[in-house]
Length: 161
Length: 140
Image (cartoon, rainbow over all chains, first blue to last red; front, side, top):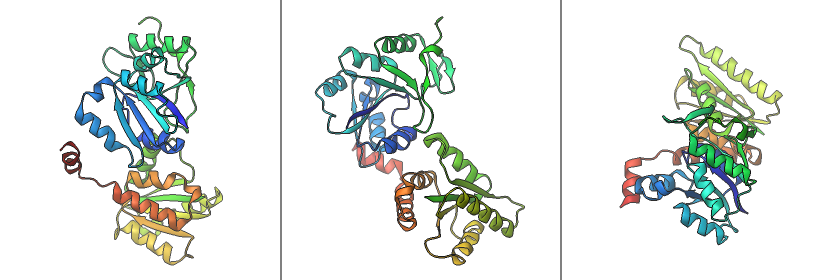
């Protein structure tokens, strides 16, 4: 019960999350914490459509998401919380949301980012947020799907960005 | 647990297995058999039987065969296998797509073959969506 997984995945709700993690963890809720998606009706609708009918999807701006999580609104649910970037996860931590572990899924390459693993590319902002999360005792690990082994990621971050 | 064999024309079956791995990670007791353009149907039947035996050696108690197209060579060969076996031993479902293979793979150990077939058929039907129509409905 509660939030079973905090995950950074720039594709947010997609097959790996719904089928891979969702079915594995037997969730009934997904909270998408993203300013961008919250402001984009089509993106929001696609997120809601992408989940099975028995999984409730909510798309909230980080500020609203923090308030909701701090009210323990998910205590009786089995939920996954999704972020597009580590910075959004750090924002929640700064708003006193209790995050013990942070799963890193896809952070795909874009110009200006540097690839550090097959599905993980980071820019300066990502590095800063991931380092700070780790320094504040959030266990940050890379794991694409439940069947894969979790991999330590902090030591792989470039220090010259 | 039920073993799964995907049977399809060309490379489709193997690529479905690869796509499943991308979404779920490696799935146990899942095999692909492809029908090549120069391959005989006797050959195909033998390959399916070999996959079946291999799955049984791996611990499969029954077999679900997912075939690409009803009425095609693959489904005709699979139908022959069904005729030659006991009920509850092997089932064949046609029209395989990615959601069906995912559904077949998940919680497989909790289902009898007959119930697994129902679950997979339902998932396949539900997966076909006219996106424009649904969006028009949702965004209205």
